[in-house]
Length: 149
Image (cartoon, rainbow, N blue to C red):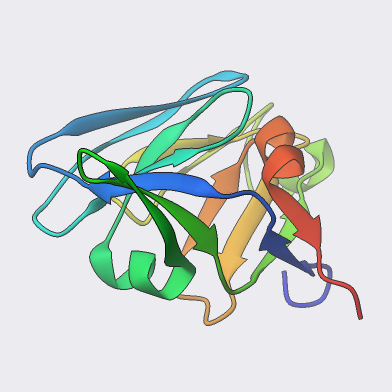
């Protein structure tokens, strides 16, 4: 990823609120169910403003690094601006086969659930390499833009 990856930043705003511990969130993208996660104390529930309107959970310390409040929306919800950058690569069929996968490659996401990487998806890592995850192609293109320079 360090050699082939490119830097991107999130271009779209998000909606978010503190999640109730025990809340089960099933993340759905345009190509189906991506993963599920159960909220722990302090986690945030995030809704991306994409055509799939996928929702997911983020740990409080990660949320604070990635987002800043723009407006309160009521009922605990807020509109947040993304900050920071990520590094990402588009994954090819050949790369999935090299990882030992068939058509897809399954790995454990930072939240300890299985996630499936498919050809055309983006493999994403934080710049400090503290997490690595998958973003579906359509949602990545709706959410991120290449950092110039």
